[in-house]
Length: 248
Length: 230
Picture 1 (tube, each protein chain N blue to C red):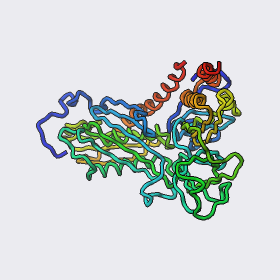
Picture 2 (cartoon, chains in turn brown, yellow):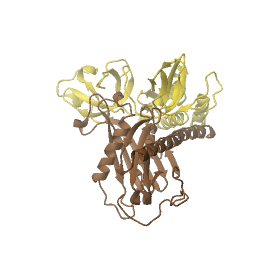
Picture 3 (spheres, rainbow over the protein chains, first blue to last red):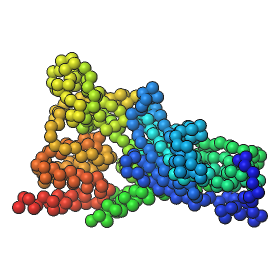
Picture 4 (cartoon, rainbow over the protein chains, first blue to last red):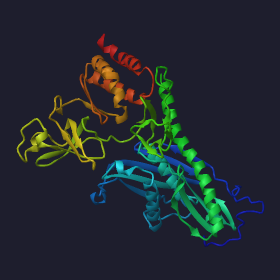
């Protein structure tokens, strides 16, 4: 955010460094059920971000003192691989990953029907294999697909995307350069059916008007991602059903 | 997917999908919001006599009273055993609930860690505290045989319409089979036949959503078993 550069992030025609327009998403690829031994899993690529999420549970909650006798708890671990960024990231939890784990768990709690599994725990592991700005959004997008894939009851699937501001313009889905040298980064997630916002952070500055356009952009983009998430889940089982028949 | 019999086409639904807004009853795997019924689980939509429900494709087994399940002893107390029934919750088996007379502290003489038992779920309360019993006809400790594990949602397919599928496997392979609602299946019999039965069960799990399964499983078992019977 604070970095300065003479880099022209958005040119006079309104085209960004990677050729996108202001309200355009990067290429998104979502796949459900990529891990054999997890109860549910998903793989998400948003541009150069590569994220894998695994879900285990509901299972017995350890340590015991974390158990809640009225509902299940969601334990989330967001982890960046040492090789996921340009300069090697020192492995292990740090201030940033603890924060991200917490906000993702809280966002997921808004949709998962936790009261059906008292005293249990639902564990979500998010691994960032390659990072290029917006990993918490990619992580949350992957995590909610993985939860659905694990057969966990939930009200809806959460899509998530970052909006922001660079070169004085409101942009959707910031990439690394825009994130580093831009003016604001706003990770954002919602429940598509009700348009309830379950995650919203802001790093940087924006005027009220810019913020409103940014949120509007985010909402439309989230609905696009939502369609991709649903499609990924359907595809997984549609193909499984087809295979069965062709087995003959 | 194409079912030619009376049932309507099966549709895979994901959480948040609208199932019905015309006043049907909400069944399992669904939730109601603003008078409309939505899916809460990944599964197959099932409409039956005015009720919409979801047949889950994945997910853990959640115990319900009356279920017969296969459990493994994982811990021993002085007046109870702890049984793992493949669900998120451990199930204590109290000495009063076994068919033997057990002295206090003498529990490990009857069931040891790792033993498989057939138990019935007695009760499940709102905080998911479970009690299981072995005091019912047919419930016992399992000796020998092998355990096949499948997704619990496919259990009804293994059993088939009024037991037709499981009866066929039993008759053809001459094995003793017990199907637990939690997706654990005990198969005991002549080593080779038991293997065939286990393979057949795995095949049913894999092809649970397809047509004419009973017929194909029959052919499958026939092809595997014939050589040694002739």
